[in-house]
Image 1 (cartoon, rainbow, N blue to C red):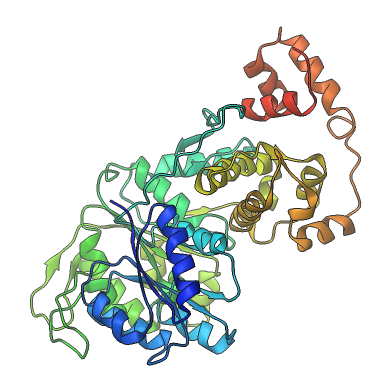
Image 2: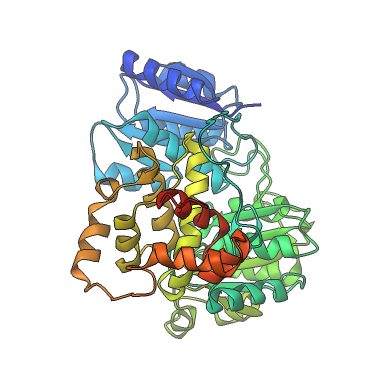
Length: 458
């Protein structure tokens, strides 16, 4: 069953073009041209994603967002507009929109946003129909065996990555509350999901919650649910995140953004293992493991009175620091290969790897946005690449400029003699590709790509 999308666009030609494009990508698309039609479709309650223009003849996108949350709370939304108003973007995101995209844009950009939403489990219940791609000449892509334990978690080769993963494996089978601390974009939700996969709860729900996007006025309803008629807009009973995660894991991302009042409510639920839906007199027992994450210094927040000390200690039974990409530079090209495979699959392409110039630029860049930035750069680059290897001219300017400012490091072992190193490694291992790759500290797939790149006759 394919993801059902409603497109609301008063530009008939543009709406038809988007609808046709997404339909070919395997989505179930319905297109309409004004707010009245959109509301009628939304009342159906079957759409998982709403893509709407900000300016419509009889309404605007923010009004549709409010209406959608009332009649179809499981419908996510992407707002598109030709009027690049920052205030509207901020308001839309605060109200729960997935993304805000400014016209003009290419359909491929919209597809990337939809797929990223699906990957981050913003749309969890229905998957996209697979798009088959074949290339007789391209080598088969194979996973880096032993480098990740599930399809969304790369462990890494570096010592700091190995230590980090050991902590996840150690705490995973316990029922301890875990606090993951680290910079933005380091993959805290992925790490939380790995902890869940290592636990005895792995076959039960994993429910991620972005605490930073929940307005404090509706936080109680989001966490604990509500009964019909308990407040304006409560047209149906709603199950909260705690009840949805019963027997499983509840992941509280950016937990430091919760208001003080919401912290008190959360602490009570954790202590009593019971929740009371808004408007109900009955308490519901819940069995939930809590994994939380933050890029904020919670100890400082406690000292400043912004975060409750008792809640901090309740959440921090075991803490894990997730390393930044800069701290695990040795793993850079392992992550690059993983995201390259991911981008090839989602975009239906067969890009083999990075050009030498791009490899050099990637090594010199600091990656302040960590894995999230690397993933986005790779996906954008794959989209724009027409050949086998990603060229320098499709890489974002900030990566190139930053790498040019940094003095190039002399690396006689790899930069200047890479081809000879590969030949030597293969000779030393009797042409055993797996052993040669291990000797060179690269994956087997990278070795095959390098052999093809240098046209080595083996």
